[in-house]
Length: 85
Image (cartoon, rainbow, N blue to C red; front, side, top):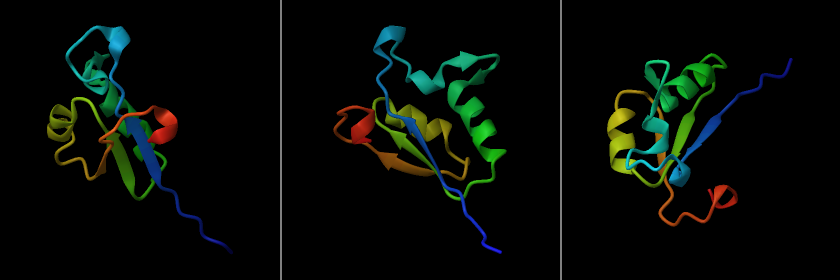
């Protein structure tokens, strides 16, 4: 029997220009939780290892919000779109 492993890469580097906010888009609250918290909850249900989050704009606040979450952080210095991430 073949055992498969699953990894997850969450793209969270977007600027969120259309939201017209200085807060990083994944840190906006929906239903009492940040959007990134919702995504992590769904992802963790799948049991991936590792979970990595791509950060860009607002990475300082995102890094702080993800402290203690047992995720790897990848910094996208130059943001050229989703395909570039």
